[in-house]
Every structure is written in C-alpha cells, then in structure tokens.
Image (cartoon, rainbow, N blue to C red):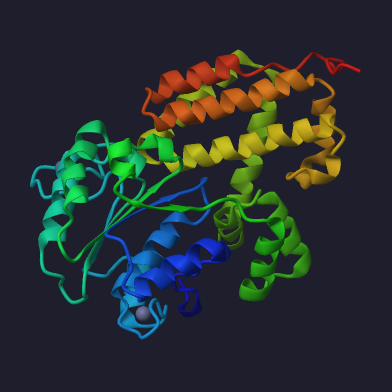
Amino acid sequence: MTADRVLDFAGHEAVVRPLLRAVRDGRGAHAYLITGPPQTGKSTLARLLAAAHLCPAAEPPCRACPTCRRIAVGTHPDVEVLPPGGLCDESGHDHSRDHSRDIRICQVRRAERLLNLTPFEARARVVIIDPADALNAQSADAFLKTLEEPPGQAVIVLTAVEVSALPETIRSRCRPVTLGLLSPGTIERYLVQARAVPPDEAALLARLSGGRIGWAIAALERPEARAHRTELLDECAALAAGDRVQRLSVAERLAGAFAHNRDEVYAALAHWASWWRDLLLITAGRDNQIINIDRREELTAVAARFDPASVVRALRVLREARRDLESNVNPRLALDAFMLRLPVAAKGGGARRA
Ligand SMILES: [Zn+2]
Ligand SMILES: [Zn+2]
C-alpha cells in the first residue's frame, strides 16, 4: 500500500460522512454491522471506522498519522481482525492450517479477552469480525454476551454480505451500515481523479465492475483480477451450455474454495449473475445497458438460445445458491443443487420465443 492510499475509501458519501461525523462528535457506537455485496468496500470501511475511533488527530481519521497507517496495514496493537482461520489463544490450535471455514469459539474467546484489556496505546480497542457470517452458531452465541455488554473501551465491527445471514439477536445490537453498488460514473470519476487511470480504461473498468468498486481497484492493481473475471465468465458460458460433468466438477471446486475463502465464491456468483442479467437485458432489447460490454457478441449469440423465463430462473437459482451458502447449508450440497437446477441452452439456437 503506497503512502497516499491509506484507508482509501471512495463513494458511499451519504453513508460514510454521517457515520464518521457521529464518531467525531462522540456519538459513535460500540458495535457496527456493515453489510453490502461482495467487493463493495466493507473491509476497508471497517478499518476506516476503527481509525475514526482511534486516530488522535483533530478530524479523525486523518489517514496520515502512524495510527491510521498501522490500522491500514494491519499492525496496530489495539485493532484485531478476526477472519476464519485466524488466531486464538489455544496452544494446540493452528486454524490457518486446519482448513477452518468458520470463526471458532476459541477465536471469539480471544477477541473477548482482548476487548477487556486496557488499550495498549490508543483510546479504545477494536475487534473487526470479517466476515461475521463465518461465525458458527456456537461462536455467534458466545459473542452475543460481549455484544450485549461491551467493555467500556470496546468497539466491535462486523461485516456481512447479507443482513439475514446473522441472527436477529446480533443484528439488533449493532448500528447498521449498508453499502450498495456504486454508479459506473462514480467509479469512473474515482479511477480518473484518484488513480490517474486514462479515461477510456476507467470507463471500461467502471462498467465491468458492475458497481463493485473493490473489483475495479483489484483489476487495476492486480492484472490477474481481470484475467480471473475472464475465466469466470468463460466458465459461466460453458456451464450455460449444460455439460453435467463439468457443472459438478465446478461445484466441487467452488465448495473446496468456500472452505477457506468464501468471498471468492460469492464474487464468482456475482460475476455469473452479471452475465445472466446481461442476457436478460439483451432479450429485452436493452443491449446498451449490459455490464459485460466486452462480451456483447457472445452474449447476443447465447441470448438467442434461451427464452426469457429460463434466464429469470437462472438468476433465481443463483440468488438461492448464495442464500444457501450464507445460511451455512453444506456448500457442496448447495452448489450441486444450484448446478443441477441451472437452465440449459437450447441446441443451436431458436429457444427464444418471438
Ligand atoms: Zn490518523
Ligand atoms: Zn482455536
């Protein structure tokens, strides 16, 4: 991370400005729940909120002081991030190696212990649970006690793709922060102004991001993010053609990935949904609104092989797959069911009703 990119968070002003103002005015919360689609900035905002609470500047977060900088790179001693596979206090545990896909109760116990300690150097201690939908039932239950009576100097930030993935008992104790998709124009402006991206490239990236600024930034910083998108969309097109063996092998791969990186799987589903939404737009004659403009020819050809009802069904089974994964249905079962219910393209064209 370069010096001028500390806790860089673009867009969402209507949400973020009042949130930070409240912290500055002493009206911050003890617990926040940040929700939003994959790659919309939830993790960055969680760190920005931590900085707002801890940064000693007159207008926190200043994004320049040692406190802000260390929070940004994950080395501040008063900020603990709890991911699946993270640290706990048990001497015999190594969750980074045991393919843990949940946030375990032993990790929650560690977070509770840290929150009860006097801050090391800042005015509060912050625990970020990212993503909170990785808490299993037992750890969510254990964590509830801390949420009900947080220690005086504790700030807790949870992130989740969907609010419904968390028990009401947890949700009701957090200040809700909802991030949506950004307009392509907002992302394009950010890329040109803050990242000095040439206007043509910025416009394309903004469009392809589908409103997920995190994807646009990743595509900029890591060329493999764009290559990965291409692979996922190629795969989506192949799956739509209907090969059952391939469908089940992709389900198996994703279920394996879900064990250690559920965001990667949610992001794959989001890319696939963008492809199917584009098909729907094309069948509706709204080609100018599609996201994946670089694949217009392929999409137009495929759209001719689906009737609109099948495309709507594909979008529905995608949504249901995501919901099943979020509610901790066995990932392999959820993904197999998704693959078997995904509509199949008509052979050679002509399925589309006149
Ligand atoms: Zn600062
Ligand atoms: Zn443990």
